[in-house]
Length: 81
Ligand SMILES: [Zn+2]
Image (cartoon, rainbow, N blue to C red; front, side):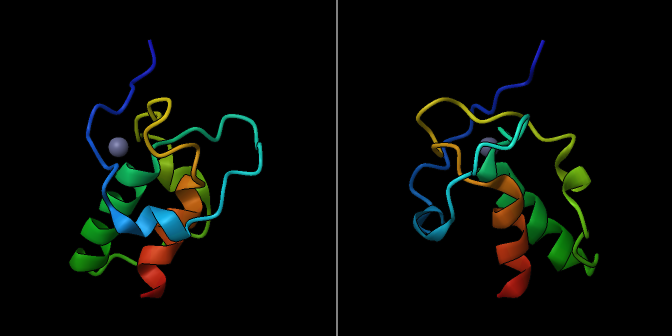
C-alpha cells in the first residue's frame, strides 16, 4: 500500500515556480512534503542531498494537489534560497 500525502500544500506560493515533472518513472513524490523536509533539514544544518534518494520515504502526491511538480526540484529550491 502506497502512502499518499493528505496534507494540504495547495496554497504554498512556492509551487507556482516549480518545474513540472518531466515524466520520470516513479517520480510522484509529494513536492509539498519535499519542501518541508528540505526546510527541516536545512534548519538542522544538514547539507542538501546530491540525489533524490532523500525523497524515498516521502508519501506520494495526491492527484490534483501539487500537480506532479518535481519533488526533487522543490527540495533543491529550498536549499538555493
Ligand atoms: Zn505532502
